Image (cartoon, rainbow, N blue to C red):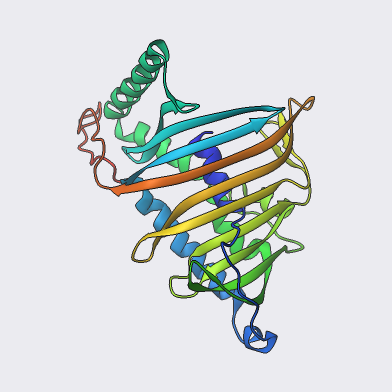
Length: 288
């Protein structure tokens, strides 16, 4: 699974609690500004997403489709402002020599390409990556938020907030329109105002890529996040289940689970060249 899809799923998908306590009295919840909490949480998410550009981690992708299953282990490495996914293992085994050689070649090619970019080329690459998840900024205006209770996730108190699509919502970002077709629930950490959990369901068909693929109603996303540092949260698990139609003809059952671990902060990989082709100095792994 690509980093792009994982990012999308982490934003719009769901997080199941390891244990949810019973809701508190409704009267207490009514006094809280749910929309204000979510708006602040989106700002916090934006901050964390940018901070993540200086972290590496391991991803395990378990995919089941049409009776077949596959397990892939990858390392996600930040290289000059955007992540790179490097395949390490398949089905519990190291890659065959020929496949390992291809992966090594792809990796070295990516390092060289990013290391010799002009400043403009680098900005274009980063802007393209940003655009893929810019719809997060539309979330505060896309939904009606209602606190339905309080709970505990990993022994941390959270607000439980229901999200219902708002009539008349006009997207302001490239992919903001998808929010019209999704409803869900947030488990919002009270201390950090971060998405400790989220759960989302597709309620209407979502189209991707010039209508070459469609995700149908009933598709369910589930995401769990973990606190890796003070106030900093990263994805821990993503589960996707549902049905997609590829090329408007081939129906594909979606059954995928991703887990993330081993978060490490630091300059994991420096660019191949500290200057672009135009000679402009650049700092490796800086988002801006």
